Image (cartoon, rainbow, N blue to C red; front, top):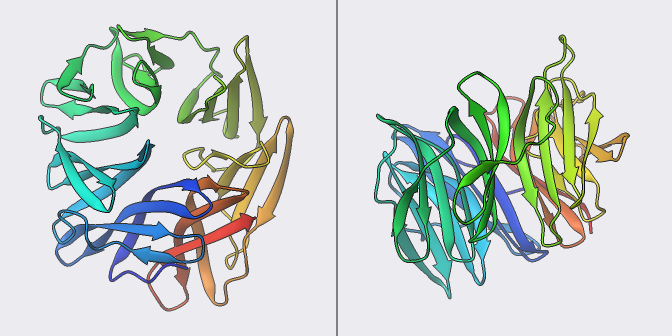
Length: 318
């Protein structure tokens, strides 16, 4: 378990490069407002990084991406957005040239980056090509980008909500964002996009279905989309991760106050696993998962009876 925080913690992301390196981000609510936090996993313990630029200033640490030997982290610093780059023991700051009212998501690959959000004039997609920032146009009828991921500088995928309330998947193909025409489940929304080196694309989302919501996963194998469902109650797919066993894992609301719970989706078969027993816990809530070598690493919060929520982590397998 990581060290406790001084305020109420909110977890944003966890990402691992291997079994001996993971980074977890978020913020903690203090008397001075939301303050950023960053933790690192070395294969045995978590330690808090207090050396990044702006560590003692209001803001929030958000998504983590690995770019070659570098670590890129998007953070909001007051109202502004910036990318922190860690390499060879040093931090550098890549400033975003435009301040947005809201920042919806961030993706990076091979020296490129995308930031999506809104300002007073509407939706903005900001793209960094390794040397300069530009604003990319979006298809007509797109209201906002909810998720964006990149496989390389010339390929990015995004889940968007349209002005008519529907959802669709867009792909950047070097020249424009185009509709992929994915056979989305009716009333379904995508919360997670996973891209791997084989060309596979996995979408994780939730379908609102006559009062019985269910999580779905859609996988593109290069020829066709395959969709599977799991009845997981009020669970969302934001924390979905493909585990080292090839199955899809989702953190969910547990039916045991003192243990976390995970759903394992392997094709049409869904099974469940619990985390370790935590004495006097009244809520154990893993928020995000990452594959770390031969294990899954979860990061989130735990509330012990008589105290406020604090950060927690647990490892499955390995």
